[in-house]
Amino acid sequence: MTGSSIWHPFTQHGLEEPIPLVERAEGAALYTIDGRRIIDAISSWWVTTHGHCHPRIMAAIRAQAEKLDQLIFAGWTHEPAEEVAAGLRAIMPPSLTRVFFSDSGSTAVEVALKMALGFFANRGEERRRIVVMEHSYHGDTIGAMSVGARGVFNAAYAPLLFDVGRVSFPGLDPQATLDALEAECAAGAAVFIVEPLVLGAGGMLMYPPAVLAEMREICAAHGTLFIADEVMTGWGRTGTLLACEQAGVVPDILCLSKGLTGGAVPLAVTMASEAIWRAHYSHDRTKTFFHSSSYTANPIACAAAAANLAIWREEPVLGRVASLGARLEGRLSRLAGHPATSNYRRCGAIAALELGSAEGTYLNQIGPRLLARFREANLLLRPLGNTVYVMPPYCIDDSDLDTIYAAISDAADWVTTGA
Image: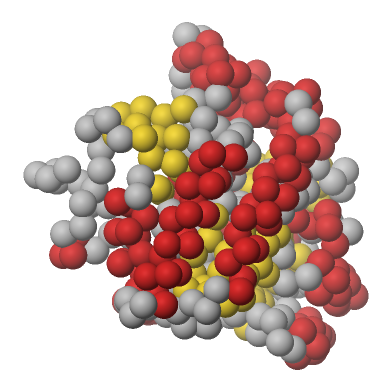
């Protein structure tokens, strides 16, 4: 499509790459205005879980739109928000007793950081240092960028970002990561924020549950608050409802978004322990948690989330995730021996590998060429540089998975012949 005045995210318009116009979606497929069927191999940026335009979620949105569209949430409430909060309390760790609504994964992280720092400030403790993991990504607002990897994503905005402590990604040397975290926590770090098991935008980097469990233990031993950013890893992506479950870990603060509404509309929550709530609970108005947005807990978005929670209660979602993971393994693992691929890995319903260079880099020149190949093959498959990953909706069928596999296999052959 040409002639649009839209400025698209993560898009260098100077490259003049085509931008297809999608008019509808269903299940694991998108349909363009020129009649093409596009397989959504990345869940439209990791959000769509049960499939596009899921009937139960769409029905809930339609019904709510006829009753209440928007309501200020400061000092007011509504039934869909109450239903979502109760539904989350029923399936999330019992110690996470408080639910704060926001609009996106990035804002859920901003809320978490503010809650954590407010916890110490309201208790009169001088603890402000935040510790993060190398290669992490937590969003594109200022606080979220500050706790993410520094590089091409945010170099232009460096004067706006605050300093944080960093530990290495626990790849080749997990003990070095744990030792660095121990040192930070022993020195009085206030907060450690982490993507559990899988670092998404950092290149679908994966590490074992045992390391996550040890990191949690270190934080607990020193009173360092542990924030789990499950915006991408939550809602079944890693094979369990939360990635933290695989390590037996319960965070002090939990960030959720993306699959919270099944991916249909924007909504996020930050769940906190009672201790963090109590640190803000006071007759002193200066200890109020000062955060909101105009559309906090939008009723229509909450209705979608309530429908998603009903699907999780009443349908075998994790069984579908397990089936998808096995079917991904059965196909993509065959590429592990291809001379153009390296570092095949899978966690739940996420599979990834590198094409060409053994090390994934976001600005690898092969990335745009791969993107074009996949687009021409009628796939929404967006590599992170030379890292190709597959993260489809749980409803995807074998035929579409075969098409995805064939396209990646063809791309690997193309790289071998001298891309």
